[in-house]
Amino acid sequence: MKISRCEIAAILCAMLALALSPLIYYLILNLPPKFSVQLTDIQSLDIAAAAAPLTTFFNITLHASNKRGRTTACYRHGEAAVRYSGFTLARGRTPAFCVGAKEARDVRVVAWADGGVGLPKPIRDRMAAERRAGTVELEVDVKLFAEDDESGAEPTWMWCKVATGGGEKPTAATPCSVFRSMIWASDFAPNWMLV
Image (cartoon, rainbow, N blue to C red; front, side, top):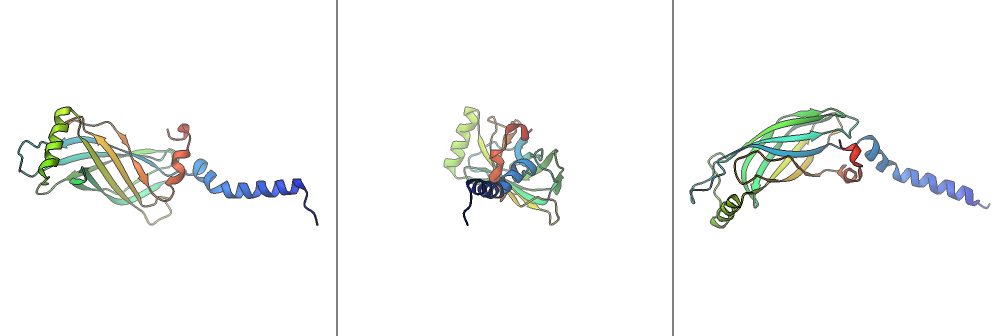
């Protein structure tokens, strides 16, 4: 029994379509949400007193965009941390929230340091130099825990780098690097799907 070239081509096309179906599903049908953060209020990031602990307070807006998704994504709660050079300046909890399919949502998070944060002198000196130069770079780490229902959300970890503008002024929204199981396809999506 001999297989013709047409039959071989048909079999190869069917195998290729089968192999690409998960990628097509995630690219066209249901991509995970994209996230960005904005620091809307920063208090007590002043390091004038060299040895005194910092008592920091941050209002964070987590922008969740599910414009590319076909299902609602729900998160039961999460944690946020604001860091400078690996040192945690403040911590907070995210509330439970859902982002509907083809929707975007802003989630307010408050992070603070109870009792203050002590930083080593070299780190304090570097932060003071960055403030004088006009930009202090902070990291915002967020962990979101998914609901146990059929919402399609998965536990999500993100890392966002935010430049404060040198002081206690609001920052621009900064895209986050997101880590989760379905995120591998997100960066292949065309820009028109991200709006």
